[in-house]
Length: 235
Ligand SMILES: [Zn+2]
Image (tube, rainbow, N blue to C red; front, side, top):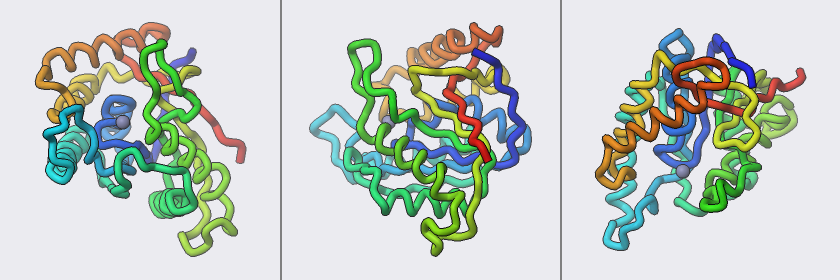
């Protein structure tokens, strides 16, 4: 495990659901934005099924989550949020999603891309990683390496662009930690903005976020950290 000190110019974060980026990488995104990077966020799903209550109306939930997403992104300093509005639970690493992601990579031209590690399926014998997370991760990897970098893939989607660094969150094989000690409060605030997902206990969620970040930071001596699997793509 090593501390990762990046000074990116442009960052593109791609996640499945409206609250995923804050939980996974909110501290790092806020730190890079504060340091002057342009940070853009892509959310693949509409968030309309993110409730355990059968009484929840899907359209109203999607609308509420969109508002939460906008507020959370503001807390992190995200420049622009792009919603692809795929129905929750129906993300597939298909050619349409890859084309959309290639288009965004070529338009924003990030040096760092952040997203979910699609190889992580089971967590602690109690949790199955959501299909939308896995499919989003695979689509992002396929879009970045190699499609976006090769001009004959989706030539209608802009000029080819090579991404240097890919950081994967929610991974079983983390090898870098980003120190988020300076932005842990932004991360906590962003996570707590998603009130529809907290079951009413925002205080406990804030504590859980701090505890998890403290554990992630420990191997590199950071008060708070976020761990990733890091790929430095060969050019
Ligand atoms: Zn999610």
